[in-house]
Image (tube, rainbow, N blue to C red; front, side, top):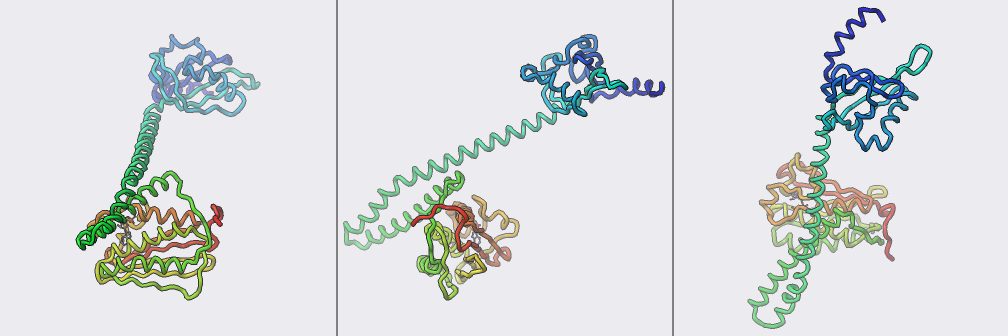
Amino acid sequence: MRPEIHDLLDLAIPSLQDYALVLLDPQGVIVGWLAGAETILGYREEEIVGCDGSVLFVPEDIKKGVPAYELEVARRSPYAQDDRWHVRGDATRVWISGTAVAIRDHAGELRGYFKIMRDRTDLRMNVELRANQVQALEDAMKRMQQFIETVGHELRNPLAPIKNVAAILPRLSEDPAIHKLATTLSHQLATLERMVGDLMDVSRLQNQKLDLRLRAVDIRELLEEQLAGQAPVAEAKGVRLEGLFLDHPLPLMADADRLRQAIANLLGNAIKYTPEGGTVWLKVTQEGGDIIIKVQDTGIGIAPDVLPQIFDLFTQEPRARALAPGGLGVGLAIVRQIAELHGGVAQARSGGTDKGSEFALRLPCKGPATGEISS
Ligand code: ADP
């Protein structure tokens, strides 16, 4: 190297305060302490030169033989690059991103090692902070799941005896007022029961415990049944409900109960979110190996910014809540899970606010690739 370059390096190295430059002899003893080494690692040159390079390592790494391993890697490969905690002279820890290379003479003889170390404690702390935040969120999420599961169970327990009372009540009296009360009680209980069922499904959904009992189902029959079931609700609200089905059987390998639940959720929503005078259509077609069930309405529609998350748990539009308060925001998440468990997909489309909505379940006729088949 030309002498003036030596001079330049002597002048440049001390200003490299963000980097610790450390020279070691072939045995790993520190022989050079340059640039920002004192600032970053907290030892003065006269204290550290002559010490084994392992003093800079944390006791856990020393126990694992990391200092010797690092030099071996530097010796046997182009370089050793690692990010790890090191110990400073004042015993505090510093996160270092470091590279070590072997220094060889022209004959290939090992003359020592050169380490470039950069303090990245700030980055590391940030990573650890984020990791802690993620962990805290996951813990909170787990507690919330547990809470939902407990609430579901605890609410279900008193429902059975109350249902009994509602069933016995009309038998105890001929009084029409009592009969009217019993009918109201039964209707409200049915709503409560559906909400509790949804809550239980949410916890099953989050724990991936929703499973299917597959069998051959004639989807047309199932849809007719759903249509008949929802007709009184639509009528009471002044919403026209219409079924448009292909005129031949549509067999599907499916869990009939889960499918009923998904369609009831979609139809129920369509009626709920369509103001009086509107129309809801239930349609079914076949495209290749898929059966497509569609629920379309002329209702309040879905805003474009909400549409992509519409199947996520607890997504609810304020307009929808204002029109039909009391929903839990879980029905569509259950619909999506049911579609996916069947090897299919759930899709939603809307022209936007007040432009109506269309929900589709696309299900493979053969059912999912795997699943529990009941006879
Ligand atoms: P819930 O109806 O209990 O709020 P869902 O998961 O079934 O829960 O639906 C989530 C949200 O999706 C609703 O709150 C509403 O904002 C929107 N939504 C669902 N179906 C429709 C529909 N047919 N038309 C307009 N908005 C709908």
